[in-house]
Length: 251
Image (cartoon, rainbow, N blue to C red; front, top):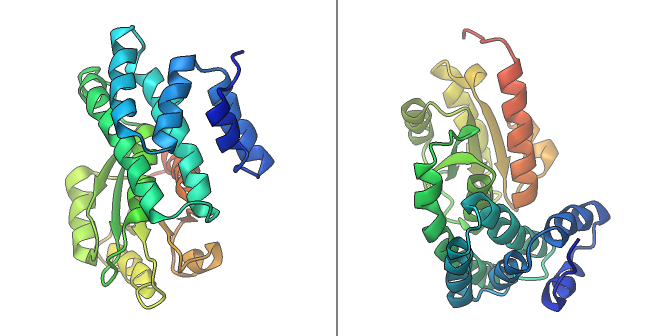
């Protein structure tokens, strides 16, 4: 078991929930020192180093999946926790996301060429009338890293746009984001629209955003709630498993 570098040890001090700290620490402590360096540079938003170190790791023979999981995703896991807990704010998340994206640029062609099928397909969008997307984008990156195919519809997304995307991509999951209390009700409208076209029982929907709680998401007829990027991934896997285990339902 390797020892965390000083920078990562300090960053993990911000992860105060024991279960989360243990899970992230477990990944990082068992990772190669180069993976730790990638993770740390994602956290601090050093995209130049993230770019250089990702290329270096590939040149040294590290698998793309290893770099993704033990480097880029491990770093973004800490970013997601710090953002949720108001330790960092939107500017820091943006620079961390940029650092992850430059690393992903080197990995995506390799991952695509490997022929590995995604574990599921997710349609994501900020609901109609809402233009906020930082949390949604972070969730999308984490879902991609966890093996999902993610199709992001952007902001101000109308119900029919969600429906069209689900049909086009044969998606199993739909993720909806709403930051404003005034747009929150559009989540329920989207679920109702899926019901009206006969798709609601064939997919699972989840929602998140500052305006929401788990109780509100369920009242708006969602199947799940993602409190943050880490919770979003866990809930997506849970809902996909439920969907795969259930018998097909005809609306």
